[in-house]
Image 1 (tube, rainbow, N blue to C red):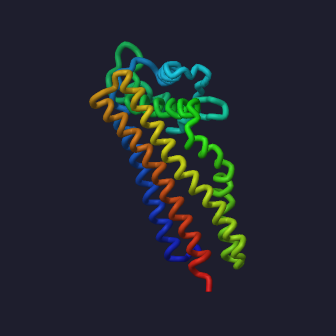
Image 2: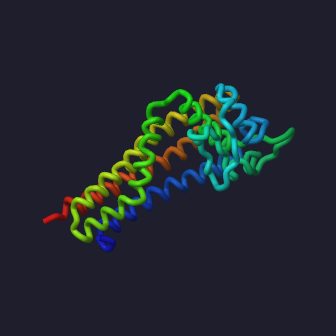
Length: 239
């Protein structure tokens, strides 16, 4: 299977899709991290302000290591701000006076995560679906491929089909994620617009959020391509 030309093609396509999405996020974030949002506070104060304005005083804020690892944890009701966003919350490459000036990129990322917190409080149906299938998706993305491979190698079709079904849960998770992320981005734009980020700043926030969304589109497409390849080697080659 590993020397199958079709496998190589799928691998190249998926790497190209994910690589392009990652490059777009990095380049877009780098560009708009140099533009002043007009918000005179640091990343953590900004997150607290947005949460409080939405009546989410029960959501805690914590730092988390890494680059753009910002996320909202619905289990603990915690909004985590990445080291990259926190360290670069002050305007990069520009002149900031009168205290910390939040960059457009940092404001957009934080507002997006606050959007997730608001979705959680509102019991967003797609967010509920996504959380429900997390265990199956985790199993599907880690163990299922090995079940498919073992089933194909040892000609155990039943085992391979079990692996394919399990991997389908991982695919379903990536597609359930899309409306959740798009919805959070819509809320984020409303948040930052309400704080005066209009014109170029609004365009920048939208660009950052759109670039981030493409990473989820890329994940869904690559998962679907992998699923179709597994289905092909299970069913398409049986004599």
